[in-house]
Amino acid sequence: MKHSPSTSAAPMPRALVTRKLVTWILLVALGATAATSLAVRAVAQTDPAASASAKAAMPLANPATTEVSGETMAHGCAACHGTLGRLGDESFMPLAGMPARQFVATMIDFREGQRPATLMGHVAQGFSDAEIRAMGDFFAAIPPAVASAPKGAQ
Image 1: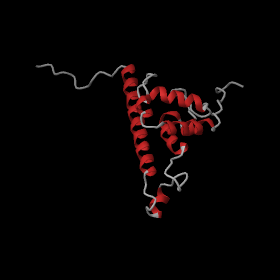
Image 2 (image 1 turned 120 degrees about the vertical axis):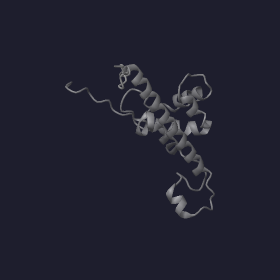
Image 3 (image 1 turned 180 degrees about the vertical axis):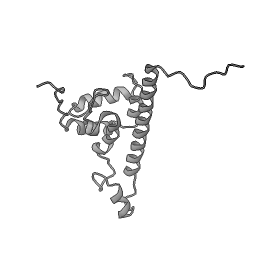
Image 4 (image 1 turned 45 degrees about the vertical axis):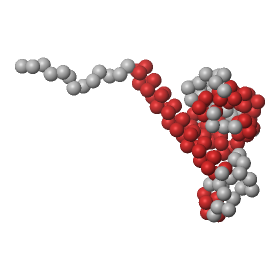
């Protein structure tokens, strides 16, 4: 009688599963950020004579100009940094309340390759200096999330 190999695979080590999960999350975040960036740019380039229904579907902060608000661009950051930059955990830097100057300097460092990153260098390359400043002003104006006390501590 021949011995057949087992059809069940050995479980993957926990570190490998974690690494694959983090890689997948980063890829999804990059895709969401890229899609948001493309959508924002498409809205910014909308012909002023476009139909009212198209404008209502994707309104600009100031419809009289093609300038996109920092708030609109900042929504792409939510995938990793939390809604309005208020992070629920400490995996990524919270952006809410960050001084605008710090945000701008950090993004420019990412964009120019002065600060190593897996994802942020690619994200930062999609924004001009003015857009980065607008996002920095937006995040600086948002109060940071208040850290809650650990359960059982009072």
